[in-house]
Image (cartoon, rainbow, N blue to C red):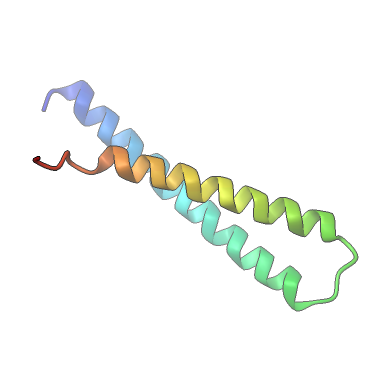
Length: 71
């Protein structure tokens, strides 16, 4: 593996860690908002939408980091 490929993998792993942390934080925020009656239903919907988008991005990066399977 050359240096640029190593850097790419390292950057993807770092990005993945950041996205997972943000996803976890959103999950906790959504749980707190859901537990208390709130008038800000729009905020809750936006947080859930952001969480789903993060989940999709995490899945894409995880697939990029997985080694190709042999046919």
